[in-house]
Length: 293
Image (cartoon, rainbow, N blue to C red; front, side, top):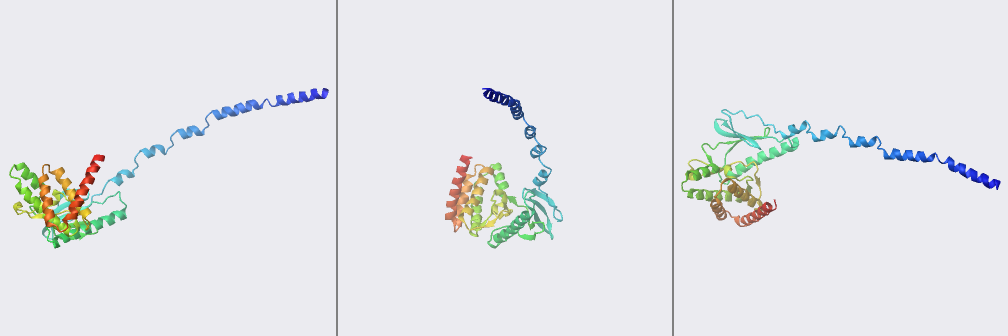
């Protein structure tokens, strides 16, 4: 019995010795409950956080496009400042000329920008020569500068854009039947251009000029900066669709003009059947896009 009491006493003393571990566990629990120093560091924004919201110093420099210096032409004056190019008027070797300087896009890689600008400048010159060989009135090319990606063209003196001519006829209140004749002439010229597999790329009434006197309907096509060569009816249909949208947005109440243009185009073009069919498909796609948003 003495031995048993001794063992029980030892067990009691062992349990009593295990007592200090309780506070240690509680202390550890409190240490886990309290946030460590790493949590506030993650919650607080680091020094890099605000810098992502603020635009860096390179932002405006990338967005801005550097306007090239004007060409050294006598009597030089700026005619139009567009997004793609600056257009000047002056004299080139004593002849009235138009200088078109492409504006470099600084958001593009320099090598890509140089390649695109050179390709489009060369294609514009080729398209103008292609038109003139086909008997389509277009400005003569005087000089192409591939260093500055500029092109020097014949200035169609005293001409008026088709856009301004339509405006003047509508505002005068006179008989607008002459506009239907103009639309038929436009259809014939565009049919001849498409039969040469030349796509203008930016057909609008402001990119067509009328030589004086306007009664002769001597139509001149200009601004082939987005042109390319293609025999696909799809590309030709899109070309006509762009012109149709330009008519609707720029010249209200001229639906009869575009109908006359298409009728003349279909009669003059040897490949008009597939093109008109593709135009109808493009129109349908455009309506669906407008409905969907």
